[in-house]
Length: 277
Length: 313
Image (tube, chains in turn cyan, purple):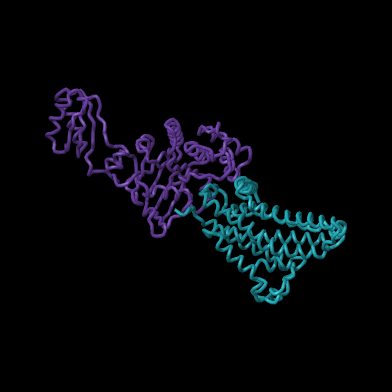
């Protein structure tokens, strides 16, 4: 990549940060990301208090299972999903609504590079927020276990589990980010495709095996180190499917995200400024 | 030579079923060119087409030889101060100009230097560190202008650039246009302030309902409007005597003595015959003529003749 392209790319990222991510408008995304950290901190404090009063709390296996549930139900299905919706769909749609996209389109920058720059600026924010939040929540969740949790993290499978959760969170940002950037580029109201994707992703456990594979969450769940136990009576509706291997899930998600972005880049080249007038 | 021109060949642009412009053929040389026409006549469509923000439905456009489907090349040679009064949120005036120079791929040092020059040019140095959101309408207009010219483009396209400017700023901005025009650059301006357009334009393009009604130097355009008698103001010492001779001519439609009694406002269908007659009258009667000047070869008159009162400019 030549020097001018690098400057243009860093220029877009710096500008996006200034006008979007460091502004007050994005506060709810920070809340989505930092909410579980606050909850796990609260959980730790409550458990420490319970243990301090002489009553026995739960053990490490329960915390591991609890995190698996929180990760799947909150991070994947809500936090990262809506966080990416807020971050990525606004990269183009927000500029169209504010009638400022023409400033970019009037520069001698390849539109493909603009798509990449905007995507990277969103991805950096999403990764910093959600990957850090995932790691921090996991680290905090079992602090009340004291030495047992430290042992689990340092010499047991804890560190590996934490890293895998962070990888899954990162891949979720990569995948949903690409999908929502495209939605924001083409669709006037990105909430509509977001609702469709959300319903599809949430129906995933109950779909037949073949259909399950046409979703992002199937591959993300396959990579999770601990699977969440579906409580009865919902468990009878869940169809069993072999999880995808990491060798398929990781490159698969990356390739799909790249293809979606490539489509966005090609379309951006033909895009016109029409602010709906 | 064509690489010095902006050309439109049979260009049409439709928004669904709504006409933007239709079958426009234009050749715009360097200098100041004004686009004049009522609201909805196609001025902004024409500007958006030549800056590549929209594409033609039909026809061919070249801006100094560059087609609009090569936005990277077009972005280098064109600066556009669009009508949208919107700015990216949270930026100061300095950051606004500097950031988009950075997006153009310039080094930090070059961005800083060009930003400084552009801000000085539009007299915004003192307000540069304030957020754009806190600017007055005139300041917003000037910072947009700074952003449009900061990369030193060959073609500057300005949609209503004088809107919101106070008289002083307006005079300074017009002087800038004249400087750029004198440097053989293209300055394309749309404005509804017709007497100012008249003063600065090298050529005018009159638009109505998506069609080009007339183009060229304003005097040339006026002389082509045959169905409207020419108005000529003659300042002389004996206007009554001149009026008596004029009324005998079949090409004279009307002759009015000026309220100060030192001139005649004449309307004639044949200006050449009038000038011959005037020479004869001067020789025969010793009439002292102070000045003879066309009174309706300005943009305002041509606009009224060709487009009429139907729309607001």
